[in-house]
Image (cartoon, rainbow, N blue to C red; front, side, top):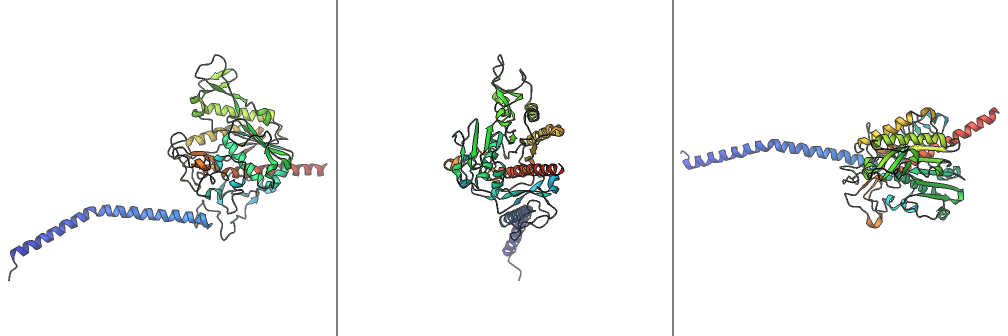
Length: 453
């Protein structure tokens, strides 16, 4: 018997309906493929990041040529390149301390902020609520030599009856407070360390002098963000000129610095349009205000003035002088005025993607001036710019307003200053190494002269 016509029509309709659905599936098939590829890619990237993060946490060495974790610990033992020399040895003299890598070290940090009373609230990130501690575990390792382990007792002995002075901006203060904590960590009686004028360690204009009574030495900070003299404009100047920077004269307090036994300079964070011309601060040479002088040119002139002052005014056979280069900021998506952030950064960066281009312009400007004076150099350069550019994870970010007020609003982050303990401790380890190197070299030269005599 033949099929009922209505059944044939029904089967044909069902076949037609199936084909329509199949065509619709074919139309969305490419989108499913794209979504699937995207999902798999995200999973792979996540796995790599997770393994990288676990490697930091556990101290495993990542196979291959991963530079980030090249010197991580394996089974509790630090992997050391046997070709490296000790920086303080005779063979270490040619080692570039500033060419190196950040390595994970479980022995760090060198102190805890809660145990150091010589810190501004703004640098106490852990106490202000920062949840991670990874930024405290990184140590700077030069590629071709080993730094001496920081020994606060030895440094205090070397500073006995001496003055160590920091002069510069608030990042210099950051480093000064770091050294106070590093040195005070071995002094049992903290009351034997005090500010000679009774001033509290809080942000203010002027200077602070902390004395280590048991060693009769002082560790001092002088606020001089430009290093050169900021003063009133000459009589008859335009109303838009509120103050001037005399780029050919040193700061008022420079007479207090020049007789120090160790002198550490820094400048740079205030040398931009916002902190100068926008606020009515112009540049002056002699009696003339240079209205047309750009910030970059004024900055160069100021560095030339500092170098000339060291050469003419400082007895460098007595005073060991250091010039620390600019420490980069790491704002993402803006700057300090426009909602820039860094609070999500928890690991160092191999590249320098967050560092603004003007950082390297400023760095080159300084190195050009210093290079032009290599024949008459009477100071050491703490060239921390490159190593610090990698430490986007070390800033105060949201955790600078004290334990009660932190975290700060998300649009008011500090990606300029540094948590302590943290990155400035490494600057001071380099300072310590160069400080000891001079002492060792001087002692060796004295011994050689005596034997010849």
